[in-house]
Amino acid sequence: MDYVLTANAIGKSYKRFHALKNLSMHVPKGAIYGFVGKNGSGKTTLIRLICGLQNPTSGSYALYGTEHTEKAIRKVRKRIGAVVETPSIYLHMTAEENLKEQYRMLGLPSFDGIDGILKLAGLEHTGKKKAKHFSLGMRQRLGIAIALCGSPDFLILDEPTNGLDPQGIIEMRELILKLNKERQITFLISSHILDELSRLATHYGFIDSGHIVKEISAAELDHVCRKCLCLEVSDIRAFALTAERMGLEYHILSDTRAEVFSKTTVTQFVMPLAEAGCEVLSIHEREESLESYYMSLIGGKINESTVIR
Amino acid sequence: MNQLLYANFSRLKKDIFFRIGVLFLFAMGILMPLSLFSNMKKYGYPIPLESGYCFYVLFMAIFSSVFCSLFIGTEYNDGTMRNKLIAGHSRIAVYFSFLIVSITAVFLMCLAYLVSSLCTGIPLLGFFSDAAFPVVLGHVGAIFILAVAFTAICTAVAMLCQNKATTATVCILGVFLLLFLGVYIHARLEEPEYYETYYLEAEEAIEENTSLTPNPSYISGTKRQVYEFLHDFLPGNQAVQLSSLSAVHLWKMSFYSLLIAVAATGTGIYIFYRENIN
Image 1 (tube, rainbow over the protein chains, first blue to last red):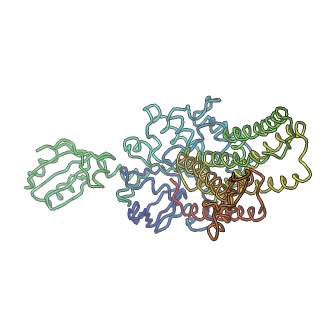
Image 2 (tube, helix red, strand yellow):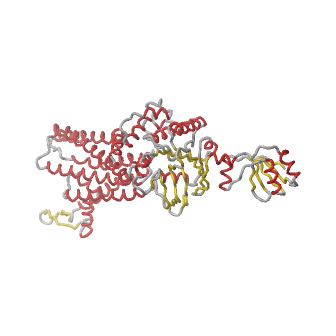
């Protein structure tokens, strides 16, 4: 698999505080990588490192296979765009002037693409309105528009929906999906709005206390989070034999606990078990969301559905 | 680097504080000769163009601190400094691009004064006297080099402090502190070694006598040497000397200015290269 970003045992310390510890992550090409973690877990610190705003204390990272210590990394950086924390825009300039300034800074030969970027970001009608008079959503979109100058193929967005109203969140999501589909731009999106992220991401990286707890694709996560029946039985061997005979997909957790993923009614399953001499001690249905999966990963409470006894 | 310069210069053209600085010094250049001309008419004695001609150096120092702190501070305040680094520009190039643009801006402010003061002053007061012309020329040259020193210091502060308000406070207060220190040291060095004391003796006929009394405020020995060095070395002291066209060691002062500029820029780049940008 081609990776846009690979981080290898990165560490970052500020005096005695260790913001990142031995962090490794992999962002595949073309992915929308949801970077999930609570406040202070190290999301923004990692983004600052990747953007070259700060240097790691230990470890290394590579962008498009180029190590951050190599000289060529500066050229590679021209392929990335980023919005770190707040949108980086000149507040006393209009949207168009901001984009022109970015074009000049990138050394682009003409301003030809500006109208297209403004339209893409939904800012084509802002005219002479200065950025300081923009709403938060407009500023976020302008931040992304600036990051899009120079046609990057990797966009890093730090909390892009922070402070946006529902309409703004929907517009942001549509913009990200559009850019990913139409321009094949790879995204690294940090967020703690898990519901919103679950509508976008193709891959996830869960960070806690400065290190990645788990990296998983959306398909794998769906598989892990699908609906299942959790059973506590008296005889796990009899349970396995019965499940095999019925052709059910199951997973044994311990000597007494197992999960059944196939669709079946309780009666259809409990009756054969009773015939096989296996007593069902408890049974409950479970459907994990991204939120509950995240909480279980970092050691919080898991939301479970109703328990049937 | 060229791309950064192009972007920064285009921003400079629209920068409100740069425009204010140019306009202010341009207006100063008109008002100074007008005021001298008005005094000349009022008191009926000739006033040459060179008197007070280099007074603008004090405003140059203040405006360089205001401009640098606000122009560069905006980059941190609006977060646009990040765009430059994310785009792959080296920190050294980013630093130098701001330094070059800031020096150019302060030079343009000085030029605005020189142009307007000459255009107004020559028709009203005539050209500089033959004796004063080389002195004025030397002082104007030294002021440009001093502008580099002031701008380099303010650029270093602005590049290393990521808070616009703090940068502005430190730069502006710092420049005022240097200027006040300049005035203080200048005043101490100007103290005469002796006072002339006059007294009258009235015995048979009234007689007027004078004697020399040592001035307790006079600085002498090593302390005087240190003060004299600081008077030529510190930018604020140089500004005070240049403003009154009284600088004697112009070459030495210009050398010190360049030394300060190199030291400030070297230190600034060294720290900025290692700094964590938020």
